Each structure stands twice: as structure tokens, then as C-alpha cells.
Amino acid sequence: MEARIKGRKPFVPDTFVDINADAQTDAIADNLLILRVEDLRRPLADQKLELTDLRAWQDIARGRLQKKDVKPARAQARLEEFLDNWNSRRDFRPAFAAFEHELGSADNLATGDWPHLLRNRLGLAHYDGERVPVALMGIKPAEVRSVAARHVAASFARPTVLDGTLNGYFFPTPADIRFGATLDLDPGAAWTFTSEILHFPVDYLPRHLIALGEIGASVPSRCLRALRDRHLKGLQAEPGGAGFGELIGSADCLRGPPCR
Image 1: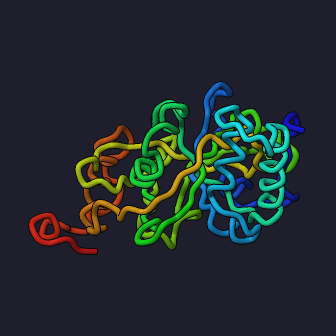
Image 2: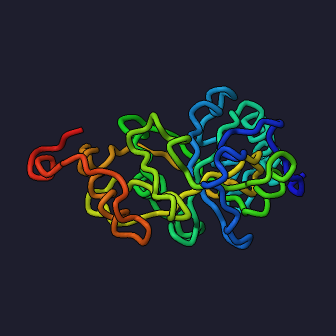
């Protein structure tokens, strides 16, 4: 069952058609691993499950936990059932993802506080103020290409305003920069750019599930204007970034109390 590679229904978002050709890229090596943080609130609620259920099934299936009443094959089957049901309800939007080699080894991430680390590094400010169960998913580019080839010519694209117009923490990059650059939520890491891409959606399998966790702590900064200005200055200093964008003017934010 694990050998299958499933694709989404025949839906083609604008991100992967000719109108967005300038932002599309295929310069991603097959031996890389692309990582994505997924919100599990809806799939868990839909299936009347708890995060502890998934954790137990994953640990049993991978030999990290033994239970007399649940064999590894049964736990693996339960994970597959959960993912299949989730896949059937997922939407078809292009998926934002980052690269393992920039974030750190997936295995090492899984042993630390990756939910908050990646929430901050990837600019996921909407995960703030409540407890959110999340999953760290990892997919090989070859799998994305295999699925996308059935529907579109492009498998990956640099995020543009086409993909993030309603999110104040989304920041496009200059056309000469091949990938997107996430807005780090840590004020002390404003010059740390993490590359991001959009990939054609792929149905999840148990092997894609790297780790499970929970976000509960608040974001480290609430001054969006200051974060955006620092981020823009960094982009302008990159090759091809000169003259890109316009500063908001957040000097007062940096000297005063936290603001939005």
C-alpha cells in the first residue's frame, strides 16, 4: 500500500498554468526533501480523533512503542486510513513548502521543538493564541513531479501576489530571485531568509509524516510593520533586489512598545 503515489483530482490552479510562467521553476533536485507544516485541527475533528491517537499509531508502526492489543501492521493501517480520509477532504490550493537542507535535518527537527521553530521561521503567524496540533510532512520533489505531470507542465513555482494577497505576513520576492523568502517572526532573525516554494498538491502517505506536535506559545513579536521593513531591507540587499518594494517606515515601532 505504501508504494502508491496518489494525486489530486484534475484541478489546475493558476499558479501552474501559462499565466504564471515567469514564476515557475523546475530547478529543484530530486534528492532534496521539501517540508511543510500542516494544521491537523480539522482532519482530527472530522474523524473524531486526538493527536495522542496519531502519535501512538506512528510510534507503534515505527517500532518506538509496543502495545499488546495493537500490532505495527494495524497501527500502520490506522495511519493510512486517517490520511486517506484527510486527503479526500483537502482543498486543491498549491502547497507552500521549505527545504530540509535550510531548516535542518528532518530527524533532528523531530526531536526538538520544531512546531514553534518552524512556525517562526516560516512566518506562520496565524498559529497564535490557541493550541494547534500540527504535522511535519516531508515529500520528495520526484513525487510532486510524478503527480503534476498528469495535469500541468510545471510542478513548482515561486510564490507571488497571486498566492498571498490576503496575508500580511506573506512577502513576495523580486522576479530575479528564484524562490520565495519567508518572513521570520523572530525580530532578532529578520535577516534570516528561508527559501519557500509552491508545489503541486500530492496526497499524503504514512511515509510523508515525519513528526507530530503542537503549537501553543504566542508569536515572539507583534510588530508587523517592523518585521516587514527589516525583511524588505534584506531582500533589497540580495542580488536582483535593488529597488524592490517600498519601506513602510517603522522606526517608531522599533523604539516603542510592540505594535501591529
